[in-house]
Length: 212
Ligand SMILES: Nc1ncnc2c1ncn2[C@@H]1O[C@H](COP(=O)(O)OP(=O)(O)OP(=O)(O)O)[C@@H](O)[C@H]1O
Ligand SMILES: [Mg+2]
Image 1 (cartoon, rainbow, N blue to C red):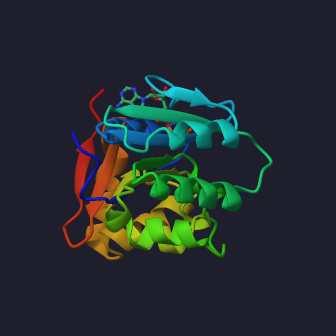
Image 2: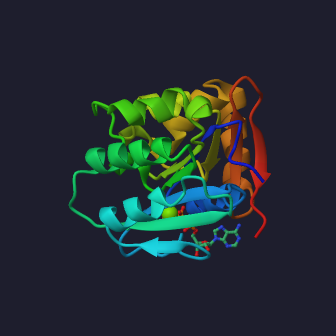
Image 3: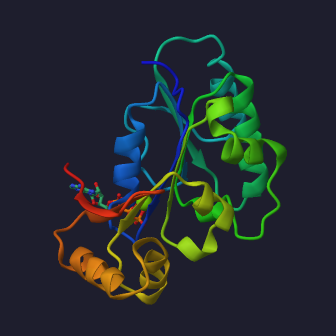
């Protein structure tokens, strides 16, 4: 396995408990180097990873990626109440400077807000992820409160359980606003648990299910 040559951005959107973090973790597990960011108190991303509880500890662990060939995943439990724009910029800079590695951002609306001024390295990861070799996986339960930019830059989106105004309006952007869109969203609503709309830019959306 190599660090992704093809660095993509994948988003996972859905209400609480819909299974977005689970699928984001499953999809990103294939990465050779992966930094998983989740908030302190959450425990979804710890398994199989080196666990860090401060930015300093995380930066130290990341610095060891330089020249390292073996697979390693790091889980950073981001403390609450910090300036997350600075955290994400610092993290992006550190990953780029060790030659790349994937990033998994849980609850990404906290890191990348709609009108946030993005730092140099954060922009680099969003715009030139392939070049700097930083594939990005992100989740959110608040799709309208995340930077429009990251949504637009995403190559694939997994859209879980579409009901509730926020989701339906948002999902229609991807499945179409007319009758066909309504039918598609109805299909998701009636599908088994952990089903989602898989949207890939330039392709027709399809309905999929996450297998445990
Ligand atoms: N495909 C699946 N099969 C079995 N269990 C699953 C599957 N997907 C998710 N789960 C379980 O369902 C629960 C909720 O999933 P997950 O944490 O991914 O939801 P979420 O959308 O990220 O919710 P939250 O907004 O609360 O973080 C977890 O306990 C997870 O292990
Ligand atoms: Mg989650």
